[in-house]
Image (cartoon, rainbow over all chains, first blue to last red; front, side, top):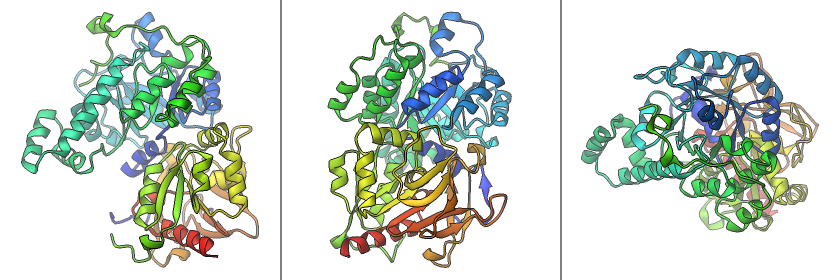
Amino acid sequence: MSTPSPAPSTGTARVKRGMAEMLKGGVIMDVVTPDQAKIAEDAGAVAVMALERVPADIRVEGGVARMSDPDMVDGIIAAVSIPVMAKARIGHFVEAQVLQSLGVDYVDESEVLSPADEAHHIDKWAFTVPFVCGATNLGEAVRRISEGAAMIRSKGEAGTGNVVEATRHMRAIRAEIRRLTLLDDTELYVAAKELRAPYDVIKEIAETGKLPVVLFTAGGIATPADAAMMMQLGAEGVFVGSGIFKSGDPASRAEAIVKATTFHDDPDVIAKVSRGLGEAMVGLNVEQLSPDQRFAGRGW
Amino acid sequence: MVAPHCASPVNAPVIGVLALQGDVREHLRALADCGASARPVRRPSELDAVDGIVLPGGESTTIAKLAAAFDLLEPLRAAVRGGLPAYGSCAGMILLADRIVDAPAGQQTIGGIDMTVRRNAFGRQVDSFEGDLDFPALGEQPVHAVFIRAPWVEGAGPGVEALARIPVGEAAGRIVAVRQGALLATAFHPEMTGDPRVHELFVRIVKEATSA
């Protein structure tokens, strides 16, 4: 046990990572209006992600995608009692400063928005508000953790309604963690070099068999079965972006995904909640996206 | 860490952790470290098989909705009314409160402790903090407590014992740990710090209730 400090302290690693621990087993939903945020809260979301356009619309409309309007963030914070997250562009530390000053509970340094820096991610240790970052593999996850990310999510391919990339990323992260647990101390130095990640975090993962922060999944989850599959693949919770409010019956679908996430290992429950949800969002086949249309390649 | 007060596994009480959402794994581990036989509870039949129940940290609105949707809310209320020992941390404290403020309209609780709890009482996540508390029922050494978007106890009936209060700052004097009979609640998360004393206290409460 570390020596406790007598004075109360905010923004510690434990408080930031602990916030994500409390979201485990839950669903975090993208919302663009206070009304959508209420629907998400009523459906049992553990948090909402406030943004200006869902990823599917960012794909269609193009242009530079940025942090949300502060009025919109305020409106969503006022509408719900659950935590509110919001997205900042990769490397855009001033957007993150603004979101912290607005009182958002978590900042997502997100590849879904247009990157603001081609070399540097945000120094997340410098903030009181915690950060979640996307990753496609273990090396990327550990680099984000070493920059101060207090939660990791798979990147998947946002706005496609196609779970294939999230599957790839979850399997990659989990398989690389399992491999680390088999290596001896000498081999771990090489693994850290190959993963381009700090040795001390790699060693910790090898010893515990898990990331030192919570691992969620994101990017293309559109159905209760998608969410349950990600949980069975080792996700500790689920982000759903366009999949809810781009579907035929958002309230029912949101509630069904929440239930399927909790009972991810019970096919009877998943079958029951999957009935009568109306149209799922229209999906995109990832292989038909040109490289510049792929969000997961943003960040490094 | 050696935990001298831990129960022996031979007569280990069976303690469930409500596993609908939240930091279930941390509570299971903390209970197992105290010698309890710990298991997740998501169904009424699983609730029937435990000697005590822990309501974990998490999002109280989500846990309450899932409990209602999966026919656990009434069985939990009945069990707590019938004397089942229960311990709630953070969201779990909210669920054990007879009355809550700053909750969405219609948010249900299990209830049991005659107290009014304010959700998100300390503010938003940027106000979440960790610090030391005096907790005399656990001994002289203070408890290092982690508060995450935590509630506090706004008011409590005469049958409720205040076990710990915020020592300093704007919230000084606020009650953050209580006991009423076999029901225990903390606004903070002892499952996150490796200090076993709160879970040891709950395991003792469960053992007293099962041997009575």
